[in-house]
Image: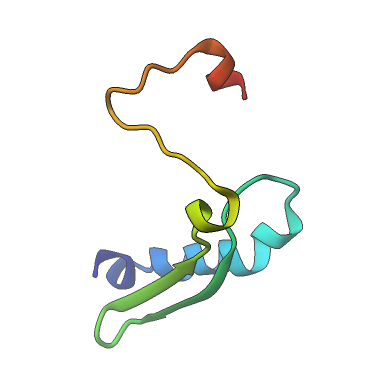
Length: 71
């Protein structure tokens, strides 16, 4: 709701759909992004990194080594 209200959903959508494909970075891809300021709704459909790249995510107790941070 907040993303639709303050317009950040529109900016995030522009980043993922327009700018992200031009960058040579490792990150998620978006397939759809939209917001409706009338009813303050927004959606950003992102790639599932666990399914596509076998990603694992840390949590608040994960010890991060210097090598992990550098990588």
